[in-house]
Length: 118
Length: 110
Image (cartoon, each protein chain N blue to C red):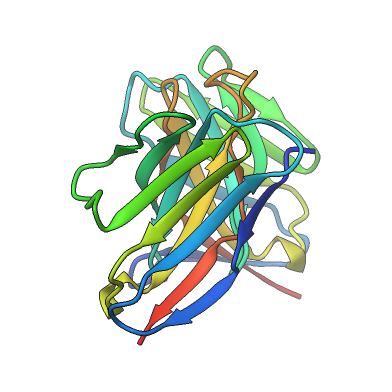
């Protein structure tokens, strides 16, 4: 159980275009989902916390107008990278925790999206 | 042996050895800790967790030790196998958001 599906797994786009990444909890509901970014050989950096039915909470230094997050249902959060540039190329990973569990339970992660902006 | 790469420290072991991966956490208020394994091109996979009211927890071939006095966490893997080769991250949380450590790459030679 507790499977998180992320789509697409890889995407290549041209500079200036927008890319949408989907994160779905397949067998549980998640009021809160998290979006991370990871550069090669580095750790995961939290970008934002996605809250179902309300605005996302962004970490310091993350542009909310560039990384649009929508959490329209208890099983789906989307991250849209707007007007992508080569420096946005990275590995984006989403995670979720079942709604009925507390903060002392593990997050379940998707398999990530490799974004390459040319 | 253990070496420091560009960003990621690396631990190289022989198959069958025991591996110990260490992690220093920063927030003394954190009360829940998790070890994740990340294989190349994939998301992190849960290995084992421990709450702050414990100092040791064992799973199948893995043991996590927590020393709150020095804010140190370790992951011990018994009889390491080539399939254990991956990057291992510790993560800490107080309630909601999870903060990841820098990670250690484990390389297991047959």
